[in-house]
Image (tube, rainbow, N blue to C red; front, side, top):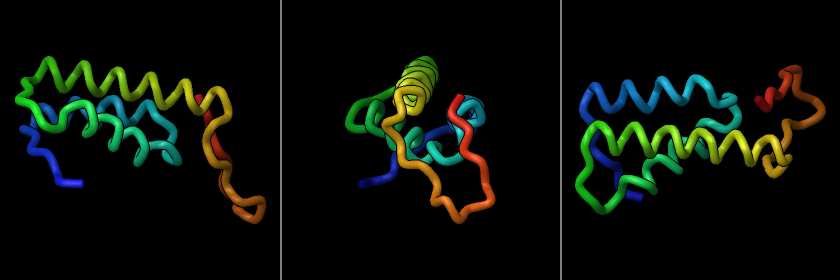
Length: 81
């Protein structure tokens, strides 16, 4: 998967939304944002829309229990918002 180029402002938009996604799901979130933006020109508004849509999609998947859970031996708690 080729990386996409974001301005500082666009990266800030993506990361602001990322903080609302549980840590265990952030990689999936970032991939979903990139998929929405890849292969076409985009501006700040497009990035914001992609970030919000990806965040909602990932959180809904987590709420439906379609994500992997942490191993039972882990001391971490999994948060699904």
